[in-house]
Length: 188
Image 1 (spheres, one colour):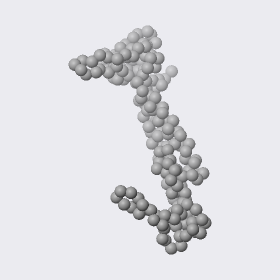
Image 2: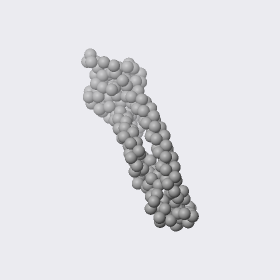
Image 3: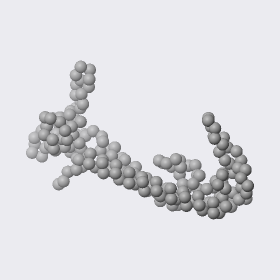
Image 4: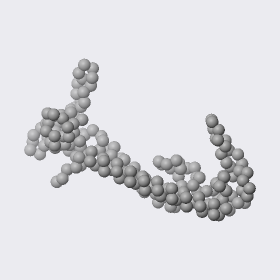
């Protein structure tokens, strides 16, 4: 059975997150351009985006005032509605949530990104008793030694400096090695 180190898995998962984020951002930008063009084609106001108000920037806060653009009135705003790219419900990782059906199709991508992030967090956790680990560094235990964790304990401190936790590893032949927990990685 081939064993894969946690570090290799984390690298691949991070690459997957980058790829999915790039796809999601590209879809997001394309949909925003599409909705803006559709809104303007239908006679929507580019100043207030159909809300009837425009923001007036300030150093401390952002007050709003009524839109004064020619042709922007209650009737035209009722006809076009609010530009969907200006909806103000928070998206889970972006600044906005677009309520259109196309943007709801992006949500599964973000669900996958969150699931991958959870896996990465699990892999980064310290090994526990029963986990399979391999030694990746150190000088006393041979690098590549792989086995099941049989013991995890805290180390004492030397001159007030706390040492990393220690770990006991037993391989399939019954050989036991003891090393610092920082010298091992989980195996998948």
